[in-house]
Amino acid sequence: MPQRGTIHADLHTHTTASDGSLSPTLLVQRAFERGVKAIAVTDHDTIAGVEEARAAAKERKMWFTSGIEISATLEGREIHILGYAVDTSNHALLDYVRRARAYRTDRAERIIARLRELGVKKLTMGDVREISGEGVVGRQHIALAMQKKGIVRTTREAFDKYLADDAIAFTAKWEFPVKDAIQLIHDAGGVAVVAHPAKVISGEQFEAMLEAGLDGVELHHPSHDTDVCRLYALLAEEHDLLTTGGSDFHGGNKRDGSNIGRYGLMKDDFTSFASELTKRSATHNRSMKPTLGTLARMLGFRG
Ligand SMILES: [Zn+2]
Ligand SMILES: [Zn+2]
Image (cartoon, rainbow, N blue to C red; front, side):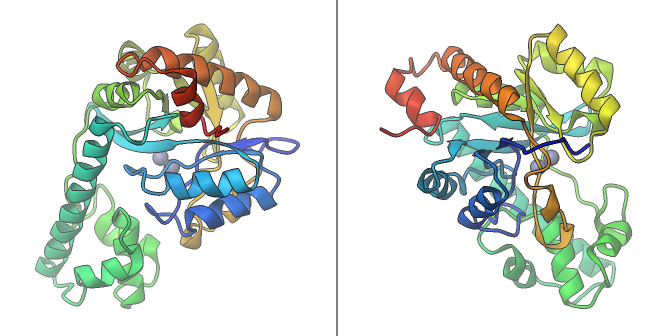
């Protein structure tokens, strides 16, 4: 559901550090051009794009916070957990992204091997790397490489025939429990928000996430209609949760460029989000005992 009026904050975006098509700088520039005043970069299982995006945002005098979108699982289902205001030098977080990256590379290689068994012989890891660059590799990159090689006509076909969760070349994903994802984000001084909850979550699963210490829900997302927004707004109020929103922009083949500036938080909602973010990240960050200086740094304000 697109919101009326100008969006102030886009808190869900992807860059070339994961499966987005724009570099962190170009992404920030695109948002800036659309009138967005506050931004978070939330790449899949990586924080590699954060510092570049932070600098680009600072240059344009935009509010910025670090972010990540962790692929977690709950009862075998994939659930995405957004982490905001995470300390990007936190050891546990750096260790997680290193392991996730290695696993994703290994998984891509296993998918390619499986495709070869299925008779698709002309796809190599080099072809996939040509698309993904040095960033985190995912199925979208494999689909694009298959399209480029003429194995399929569209990435959609690649997913339907081979790569989707129920398709023949599907290869198991890394299981990282939601409660561990939330803990990891808290330990890095951040707040944990469930991304696009309408896609995946049952009542019991939502309860389990609350028990694990979930801080917030993503309300505004291109996949959410008015009813979903209303439902999660009520749940958020009931459980004292933060509410967020963003475009989930990837670019390229996803043709979602028009979503930037249309999905996110309006100014008033953003103001309450930003103040809650400061409060909560301070309470989670016990290990660090943050000073005003470290908090300010995490939130992107530098002198
Ligand atoms: Zn997601
Ligand atoms: Zn996303």
